[in-house]
Image 1 (tube, protein in one colour):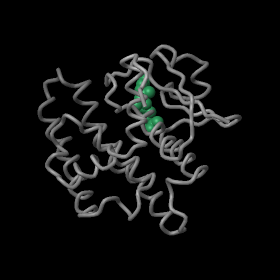
Image 2 (tube, rainbow, N blue to C red):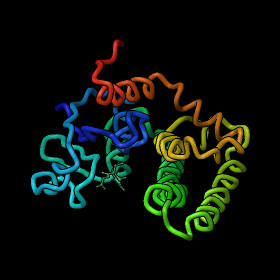
Image 3 (cartoon, helix red, strand yellow):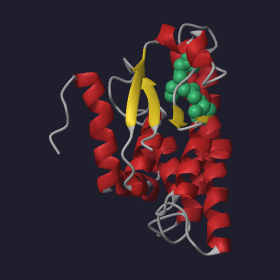
Image 4 (cartoon, rainbow, N blue to C red):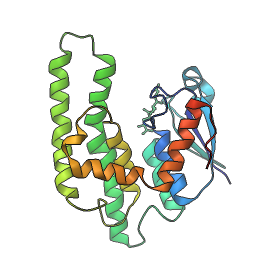
Amino acid sequence: MTPTITAFERSPDRGKGLARDMRVRWALEEVGQPYDVRLLSFSEMKESAHRKLHPFGQIPTYEEGDLILFESGAIVFHIAERYAGLLPDDTNARARAIAWMFAALNTVEPPIVDRSMATILERDKPWYEERLAFLEDRVRVRLGELSSRLGRADWLDDAFSAGDLLMVTVLRRLNGSGLLENYPNLSAYVARGEARPAYKRAFEDQLAVFTGKRPTG
Ligand SMILES: N[C@@H](CCC(=O)N[C@@H](CS)C(=O)NCC(=O)O)C(=O)O
């Protein structure tokens, strides 16, 4: 059964692939599973029909037969469990990859999202500059720790996994901040993720929603 996911009809990032449907698209491309996309306006996301799928009125969601999921991490985890290619077979390696999935969403993403929300919602506040400096310090702490752990490795735990997929999408949210560039191994790590054919297909597909052009490949 072909799953259906939801995405923004008009992404606020204008097709830069920062919205969280990108993670789900990338995961589905990595495992070679075709999917359909239902695009939603902001008002449709808040209507009861969509809230039946997503209690918080957000994207992405995932529908596959009787199964309805929300939360990008849960959706990527489901895809990784259902199809081969995103989690190792070895039990311990699999558990470590899952730990990296949680680390991406629970430890690295929150300070990055706090920073970007401040730049959107608090820019005109008198405390903005001081708060931004504080939030950026918190991001730098996490980036420094992640950079130390990654070292010279290509991926977080040997082979590419759903943990890397989520971590790369989380780090991409720093695009334009100038923060990631201070950690060359993390910049290279993100570039390595973006160079994967599955990533490129997912990116082109989400961009096509914004440009109105269908991807050529
Ligand atoms: N923790 C959720 C966050 C979902 C989320 O924040 N989605 C954004 C798009 S990336 C959204 O729908 N924003 C519109 C809104 O919250 O009204 C997940 O990972 O799926």
